Amino acid sequence: MAVIEVNDATKTYRRRRRPPQKALDGLDLHVAEGGVHGFLGPNGSGKTTTIRALLGLVRADSGELRLLGRPVPRDLPQVVGGVGALVETPLFFPTFSGRLNLQLLAETAGVSRVRVEECLELVDLQDRAEDRFKGYSLGMKQRLGIAAALLKSPRLLVLDEPSNGLDPAGIRDVRELIRRLGADGSTTVFLSSHLLAEVEQVCDRVSILARGKCVATGPVHEVLAGRATGEVRLRAPDLAGARAVLEGAGYAVTPVDGALRVQGVTAPAELTRLLADQGHYLEELSPVAADLESAFLELTEDTP
Amino acid sequence: MTDQRPSLLRAEVHRFRSRRFIRILVLLALGGFVVGLVIAGTQFAKPSAAGLADAQRIMAEAGQQQEQFRQECLKQPQPPGQTAEQTCGPPFEASGLGVEDFMRTKPFVFADTAPGAAGGVAAGTAALLFLIGATWVGAEWSSKSMTALLFWEPRRLKVIATKLAVLLGAAALIGAAAQALWLLGAKALAATRGSTGRLPDGFYGDLLAIQARGVLLVVVAGALGFALANLVRNTGAALGLGFVYFAVVENAVRVLRPKWEPGLLTNNAAALVSKDGLRLYLNETHVDGQGQLVSVREIVLSHLHGGVVLVLTAAVLVAVGGVLFARRDLQ
Ligand SMILES: Nc1ncnc2c1ncn2[C@@H]1O[C@H](COP(=O)(O)OP(=O)(O)O)[C@@H](O)[C@H]1O
Ligand SMILES: [Mg+2]
Image (tube, rainbow over all chains, first blue to last red; front, side, top):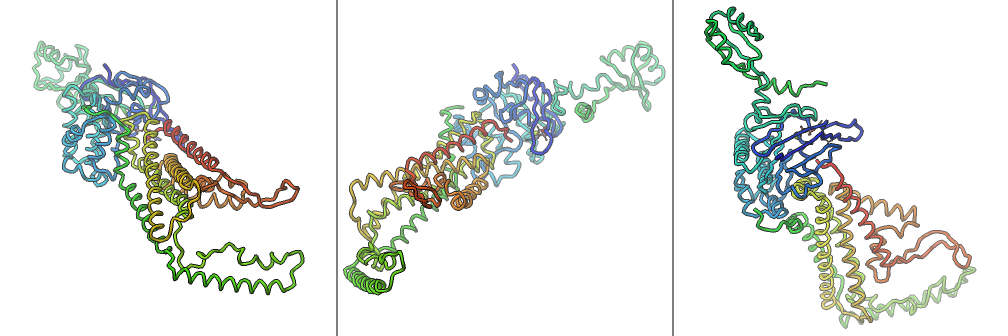
């Protein structure tokens, strides 16, 4: 079952004395249950808008949105108990302690105080739980936001750029937590991020967003690494001879300083056999590593 | 993990009780009330026998002087078209002054003061609740914890209605407590600094009715502060709007458009908590029943008028704020 489904959603923000700003432009999104699903896109591509629309904070102009199988915002009251969310910066009352802020939410949802303490511990805030929220560092605020999102033990956990403002240790902890949650089988994590490395590290699947549209979706390694499908680099004592054999078999080959680049390779073992049959023995055969950064840029770059 | 029933109402009551600024405001108001009572205590004193004799002597002297002056005035030729009464004033006995007016410190008379001051206490409590209502919801907006709450209860109208209900409940409690305190304070002043005085028939019924309408005024003021802050989504801006209305708009209306005075909130508030409604004298020229051109018209704003105008105003502002909140995109 899909925990998130978006079909052809559009949203244009009307702005005072400025032209309207298109944020979602026919977005399709499908997030299957289980694991960690990345929602990757550059700043301003519409990630937060998508999440706000799913949570009923902004109204999409058109399109169909579903959370946990129910249409939203109509059925949001019925499904919201299964969805925990942290959207952009955490929003808490500044003069209340971290604990009180969580307790008030817990009372609203009928969550026990024991669970409040569990979640505080999970994000390592129990020692500072009695301090006022406004005195927290950015990282502590973010962690409290994650704790709040976890309070409901949600089936779907939506995290919008959760590592914003965290120091490297905090980022590592959060990523570990996300991976753990995604692996436990009862929670699907939907992680929005503009950081390729973050998605690569923690996500099983990814959807890439560019200017309000989903431009690619699938398992992380297919979407990002798989972009350079079947390009290998090989070396052999007789480069010219090997090249002739490969071209004879229909491969596109380009010589590059002391080696050959072969495109369109689906099974590298095939090359080995082909060349060995003709008496060429390989000194090196390696897949050309996909350049993730450029794959990402290629997917999201400006194409009008 | 749900071992207790979800309850937005319980959470909001908890939130209200935890708001430090609201507690400070209530404590400050309580302090102000006590200080006011102490100061009032110094202004009144039980008449002693000697004090009474003094006052009677001063009154007699004043009466003599006044009468002397009047007699001399009457000997002078009177301006045409004026009676002697009009030029020289009434005889001293008709002036309505009593011996207590000549006491150095007057006694506190419960029967005379308690009902009117109950209206004053209601007005003060109303100002307090306007502030509390504004900060209650205004701070939720500026901290955006209003938005965060919607992840937990997406029915926006339910959220805003619950917050309003908590405020109105608190307003009724605070308004009633203030009136109870005033009743106790007035009794204490009467016991130590004066007397109960002669209670007319139905005195306590009238007093309680004024106090009950005072509680209504407090509740309406809370709703107004809440509605304004919810509309502009900021406490300071709401208080600014309140200031502009009460200090600028109302005074401008009094000067420029006296005809509109029956619609002013302060007039209606005064009408609501006074014993018999508010008498307004509007400066305007019109032709009366006898075909005479008169320039002052008397209007009585009833309790009902006051209550209806106030409740409707608050209801409209609350409703507009609620509808906008329900439809708005939130950040
Ligand atoms: N409240 C708003 N008013 C006007 N424009 C907005 C508003 N919120 C977002 N936008 C615009 O919509 C686009 C998408 O923004 P957003 O969803 O926040 O992207 P992301 O989260 O991917 O960075 C951006 O161009 C942004 O400037
Ligand atoms: Mg964003």
